[in-house]
Amino acid sequence: MNALLSGFLLGLSLIAAIGAQNAFVLRQGLQKRHVFAVSLACSLSDAVLVFSGVIGFGAVISKAPWIAATMSLLGGAFLAIYACRSFYSAFRHEASLNPAETSPPGLKATLLTCLAFTWLNPHVYLDTVALLGCISANYGAERFPFGAGAITASFVFFFALGYGARLLAPVFANPRAWRILDFLIGLVMGALALKLLLGALP
Image (cartoon, one colour):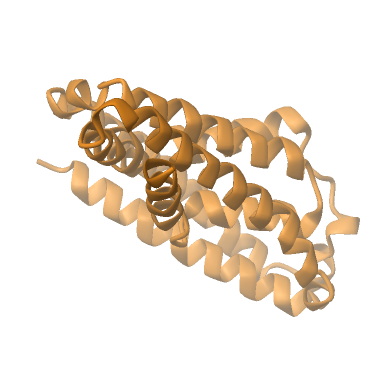
């Protein structure tokens, strides 16, 4: 039980920080579009990554630095494009910011975007595979309960974020609120893109 709780608390602390993935889930929750599918995709992705770390795949990542460099370049480019899209949404005509008036992306496109936020981010490998994997080794035979706790934290967090976002729906009935959100998301994406691209430079 101690290992399970420790894994839950550590996993929650690692994913609670504002990032590209969380911003995307928040936006989907506010728009009430594909919330279950997006929350499940994020949670299952974390489950795969955490389990990989628990069984020792983190050692492979640490011995292949080119993996992190490649993910940094791909992830940085992807986030830069998404940042530009967010800034465009923030500064275009207000009437088009009403979710009901826009043509929403389909489920497939939404899930592909969601998975890109997860799997093209090298930091997710450091947090889940490497860090959680290394810490789980300290628990010996209880490393799997530790990993289960971290995985549970992902499910709780993403579903709470996705479905809890609708509580803010009255605030985002105002197009100006959507402008501000898109601008902030653009800043987050842009800052992360710059960090990843600079980190990939020799």
